[in-house]
Length: 351
Ligand code: GDD
Ligand code: MN
Image 1 (tube, rainbow, N blue to C red):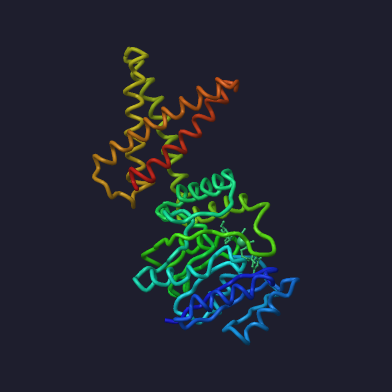
Image 2 (image 1 turned 90 degrees about the vertical axis):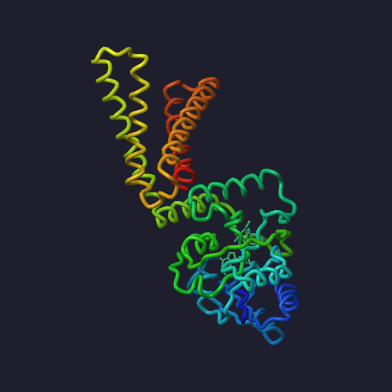
């Protein structure tokens, strides 16, 4: 088994000597190459890497036309000659000593082994609590939006190993910069394993990923949801919801015309709307995801409706209490309840 360690770099000159030394120490029992993909760094990282290739088995790709972290890694996938690829940063926030544990998992049968900050034993050094919160919140959002990766605790890690076949035929989009996310959605694989590690401190130089990071991440999630068909489901779910409003109003009107009590008539009208929505979601929106028995799906759908309603009321009450106009507060409540019901149903009812 030959290993290719792919390292994207931009102005990492000061980190290279220690990085190469520690990789070669960690991989002394393996047949390996290091593939540096540098975007023509002003500090001439590529040049130092070339010089160091006399001492270590390093191949340097100096790109002058293209730029960007993800596209650099994808280029590395194309150039690497190994059977297993390892992707890692150059700044030593990813300790090379973890590579053998990733490779062990691949040898044991995993297709992808992720060095993870968020499985027991993993951690980040020196992050303020709010930085952790933002990081974990962003990951939670991704796992909710993309059910395929909901079991991966750190799907945005930049440190992982995979079998060549996982990415060989995959259509990876170089625009999004969370390359692992892209691989987890579009790659060909069965088994993902996470290995804990400590995300250390940058040894030298400075981070390049900041500013519009969050915005780009959301855009990336949106693109991947579209690719996965989750956006279509969301649309279908909304159309079904609208049909439910009509059913609800229609039956309410009919019952009241039959001289039912107005306070009571609302209840069967709502239940009929829920049944209508369940039916259409079951045979249309989530048709391909009918795994649980019908009765379970039906009960779960009701639980989602109830959760949504409680949520809507809670949001409404809180917003009115802090002084928002009650109509606006209600609107916010409705939208949030919609999101909650979609997520509940996507992950539980048809999960
Ligand atoms: N070729 C190339 N082109 N390399 C780049 C570019 C680029 O445009 N931008 C960054 N890199 C290289 C850096 O030189 C470094 O080796 C690696 O990519 C990571 O960049 P950092 O700037 O150190 O990123 P970070 O520490 O903020 O983010 C890391 O941690 C995140 C998790 O919190 C990365 O590993 C992310 O992928 C990861 O999601
Ligand atoms: Mn870094």
